[in-house]
Every structure is written in structure tokens, then in C-alpha cells.
Image (cartoon, rainbow, N blue to C red; front, top):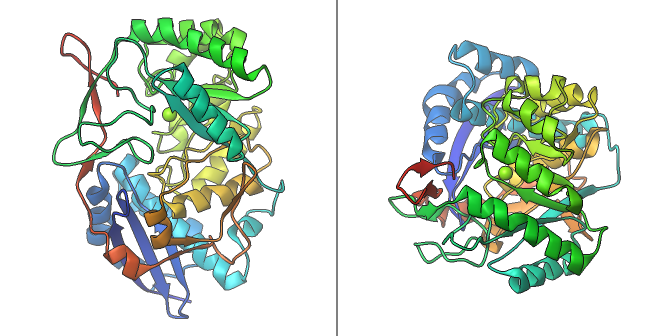
Length: 409
Ligand SMILES: [Mg+2]
């Protein structure tokens, strides 16, 4: 079998997605997700101008060889643009291999280690009554674990709170990236946040009891000592995990955080390679790997990092917001089903428009995801529907402190 074409499809059903479609001389096609939220066209261009022509006439079965060729031959390694492009090729080749074998990809990764994947959903509210309604809504939808995000008194707009409108007038329900020529500016006050969040978790525990697994995302906004303080102050509320407490480029900072708190820690959604996790895993400074198939170079490296993490009893918690396309989500559900050290899968349902463009075999039943048993990844692209949603420029918001300083969003 030989690759005969590789096309890049950019579509914007509710939000932008970049998809690579590889076709072989046997008529088998494979899909890969190359979506990099807010910088989508950089990856589309990287693929179109520098990668697709290199794939022609290659044997699509040689997944590892193609991955190493794209990673090493570029000379300039790593980074989100390069790794999202390599991820798309890797996923598309696994999709083709599965279709050629007549098997879902998880069978090629060792077969199912569980019946389905436990997920967590995103509950949020501007105040406690709205938050409680959102938690109840998610429980009714079947979710067994809940991420809790709320507004903070004194902060006007805040990441992860679905009910608030952005400057563009759109809501956060599906996507924080606002369409338009400029990113939306939001505000931030760490001290107000640190005072407020423990009171929210106390109220949620009082309302919903001790058993419900609760998660929270700090979205990289704290210093290490502030993160340590938050972890400590949330210990009475027994979180499933506390995520992204500090920008994790400095892996050493997690030593300080870890010394101060037994709240389980999750990080890694913006990481691109195993090297970003090296210290965190070998020193057991985290409990969950948040990498996403799309931004981590695809299925092959995701499986490898989880095998490395397994030696340290560290589990998966793959990044699964709606900017991971149905193709990227399918890729990580196949990995999650196969690995022994699966933890939990983040799941935000994609919009109806997105689901018309990407036809999926994946099911969500009673809070559990399953990738389905179609050969390959189980996602097909409706190209006619995709073409009816042209790209729209969009940016993630950014933060400023009250004195005008730019802060992590
Ligand atoms: Mg996060």
C-alpha cells in the first residue's frame, strides 16, 4: 500500500478545526486532527507547505518510521505547531492501519483494558445556585465526575464559566475562543481567587456529599507557593485532582507544590513531548498526565508516555475540550481504552454542527465513552458539510491584572 494524496481541510462548525486526510492507492483513507486553537492556519500551512508532499508514495503501515522521519528530519524539534502536524499524520496512519486490518485502533494497541472510559464534565456558574444547577444537569446527563469552575467576586470574566458572555456576545458553553480580529481581554486577581475557591468547594461538598469526584482547573495562573496554598486549602474537600496550578514549563516548581499538599495534581495539556513530563513523572510530582493526542504528536507518543508513567502509578487524564476535534478525541479514547493506567477522560460534547461534519462511532452512555468498533478511529469527515463552514479567525482570551500587567490566561 502507498500513500497517494494528503489534503488539509479547514472547517469551522461552531469553532475551527484542521483535519488531515490521507488517501492510499487501495482507496483506504485516514483522518488526523491538527487543530491548534487560535493558531490553526499555522499548522494547516506547515502541513500543506512542508509535510504533505513528503508523504506521497510512503508505506502508510510504517507509522513509527514516518513519525521519527517527520520529527528528526525537521531538525527544529518540538513546539505545538510541529507536534500538532506530526500528530495529524500519526493519527491518520493509525486510522488507515485499523481500516486495513478491519479492527478498531484500540485492538491494535493491545485491546481493551476496560469496558468503557469514565469521564468528567464541566459544571460552572456565576454563583452557587447557578453552579449547583449546572452540577445537577451534568449528573442527569450521566456524568459521574464533575469539574467545578465559578466566577470570583471582583473578577469580571473568568475561564471556564459557561454562562458568562464574552465581548463577542458568544457564550463559553462550547468554546472560549472568540471569533474576531482581536482576542478578548479578561481580568484576574489571584488573591481574590485563592480566598473564594475553598468556600465554593465547601458549599459543593455540603450540597452534594462526600462521594462525588470533584475536579478543578487553576489554568496556570498561580505562582508555585500560591499553588501550594490552594492545594492545601482544598484538602478537606477531597478533590479528584487539581489541574494546571502553575505554568509548568518550570517542572521543578512542582517539587515545592508537592511538598505542601496531598491534593492530587494534573498537568500537561500544553505539553508537546515526553521531555515536558520527564521530571514530573520520574520524581512522581504529578498524579495525572493531561496530554492530548493532537498536541503531543499523536497516538504513538501518547501510548509511550503512558507506559513510562505506569511505572510510577501515574494515570491518564487526557485533555478533551471541544478544541480537540472528534478525530483527536477518538484517537485518545482508543489509547485510553487500551492502556492499563487509564485515569479519567475529560469530555465536553461537541456542538451539533461539529457532529454533522464529523460522523462518529463513539458513544457516550451513562457517563462513559467508548470509541466504537468500526475499523480505524471510527470518524468520517463529511466534506460537503465541512465546506459549508469556512474558517473564521478566532483567538483565545488573555488576562490583565488591575494595574494593566498581562497575566497567564
Ligand atoms: Mg487545564
